[in-house]
Length: 122
Image 1 (cartoon, rainbow, N blue to C red):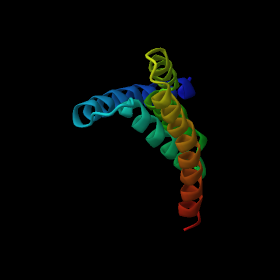
Image 2: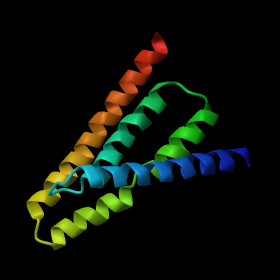
Image 3: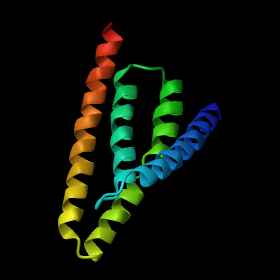
Image 4: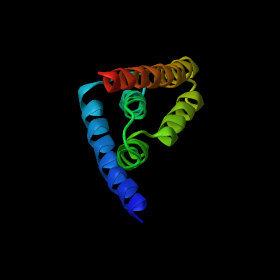
């Protein structure tokens, strides 16, 4: 039961944080790509990598990794926005969006893991 509460608590704060960051990004930046979702997912990939690489306790990983980061990042919105770009004949933007989202996410998650492991060694 404790695990469920930790994931739920982390998820609550992750979802609220995503909403705040997304709204702020939409007000500050205009772009031909859905930048708010892209930034949230890239930041989330890096932070999740950092959490996993830092050799944290299982309880902390449930709270921050599964709960917070699971709710903070949004794969479904990412896919929906990519499909909308494609349907609106913005295929070039669709491909760029997906390349940055997937490629950047993988690279940033890897960098987060390496950095987390480095900080663990210090």
